[in-house]
Image (tube, rainbow, N blue to C red):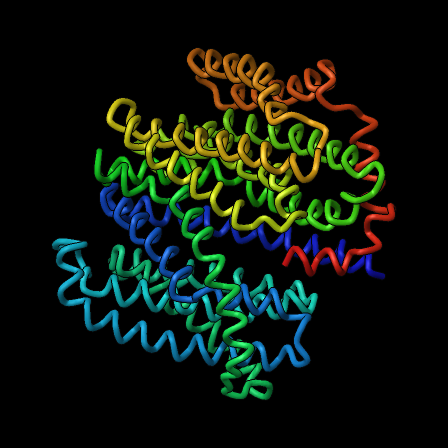
Length: 494
């Protein structure tokens, strides 16, 4: 039964991730075709700030709730404490936003249309993200995957509906986007609150609250460093170049990051319970090494696929003025692939509970990224920013491997993922040349399919992966002993 629950929950989360990302892809052409490049670039910057504020305003209270969900006598009271605090703290943040807004918005947004509403909208959106995350996490911890997934999916779907009205019908521009997000988030929260009203009692249990806040705020430094690593480059591009460059970079990022919902997130949901089950067994290192080889094989396949279909994807979601974004996709997809590899390299530190050291490595990566941006953007523009992100992950993986190996040896070197460059570079080169001389989209797609098949053949031919390894992983994931701890592993993941 536990195996079936893990499988069904995994499929629900996978489908939800893909569907949600699909709606996000529909939103992109809605924005790019109704906003100027400068407006879309400004929207992307403000959205980045909103994501940072969501981390700071929430104070990690929902993360603390997840961490101690199974260690308290009454998890419902823990959730009520988290919601009560978030409502009260959110009201304080909204009040502060309205106080500083008259002085702050002219400095930040100049004379942009609706600029006086940006700060209040962004703060309120950040608060609603935290509140809805509490409900989503509560359902997830109770293994109600469908309800948990529907929260994010419903929010995105409602955003699409409201944005279509505000942007296409009412021509509200950036203000319409953030108003759509606000109404969608509020509608979902209101519905969740009403169906849970019987269980909700406004409570602030100081012991539970302080426990959640200590844990949540302890993660803030690492979370903010991750934000710097992933999103701060937009501000550097704006500073060195312009908002149009930010817009092009953002489109490239949205295509390149598709590797996350398609592969990395589902893979991680399987690998997390697996690694904590087998790492202390006699052949644990070998089995984790096999998983790493599978990760590289499938991951590089996704990087190649996104790279050679990048221009086609960009043309579907944006106008011709964003065409340069297609050249960014291989670099960005590669950076996300390297980010996913941290799950392997950092295993030793997690086993040894060296989380402060892990946070310091993340900070180092953020510093490398910012430094790389400052050095490369003036010379090669937005491509320098994408390359800086890759550099940061290369450094962080190497450092994670160095320190992690002291506590747990994985049996493979830090350089293993880069072996696939001997396959990727020639195949991408063939695509590049073919793209210059082929004028038919049908022939281009056929060529891309041939290149993907060639990648598989070369990977087996060079013995980077074997059929036996693929078979072993699938058999174990479906029938093996590792799934006996399905529920426990899912708790750790959530």
